[in-house]
Structures are given as C-alpha cells and as structure tokens.
Image (cartoon, rainbow, N blue to C red):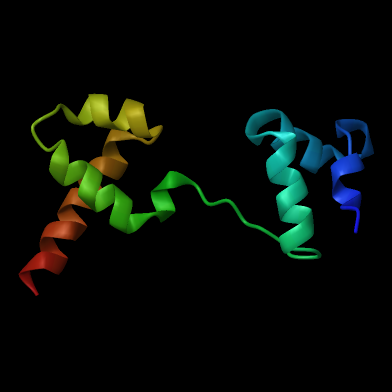
Amino acid sequence: MENVFEKLTPDDLTPDLRMLASVCGLDLIKKMLLNFPGMNFYVPRITRLDNFLGKYMIANQMRPIKELARELSVSEQFIRTFYRNRIKSDKK
C-alpha cells in the first residue's frame, strides 16, 4: 500500500505547518500528519519547563545571573525569582 504522505510538498502545507517544516524538516511534518491527525499542539516557552530550568540553573549556579538570563531569553528578575521560589520549596 502506498503512503500518501510521501507525496506531500511544502507547497501543500498550511502556513503554520510550512513554518514548522522549514525549521524541523518536511519528514517530521509527514510523521506528525500520519501519527497525530487532528491533534493540536502547544509549544510552551522555556520558562514553563520547571524541571529543566531547575536542573539547568543548579548545573550553572556559579555563572552570572545576567549570562543565564541571556541564554534562556528571560529577565534577570525571572532568574532571581525562580531561585528564591526553588529555595522555599526545597525547605518544605
């Protein structure tokens, strides 16, 4: 049986899928269409990935806050608040 998704080209895609294909590749889009038809995806900002942020900041705790903020595309205040909240939750 022929896989109809193999015939897809970027011109066949909607603008949002075309944007994803330009970053992730057309093969990924084909797999998404095949395996997740009709599903909606939400791509969160990195600031919503608390486990990742906690591990990353612990591994880089000796680096300047300004540098971490720039790498993560967040404000220095966000880093300070995250550290403060993390310390409070660790004490509980």
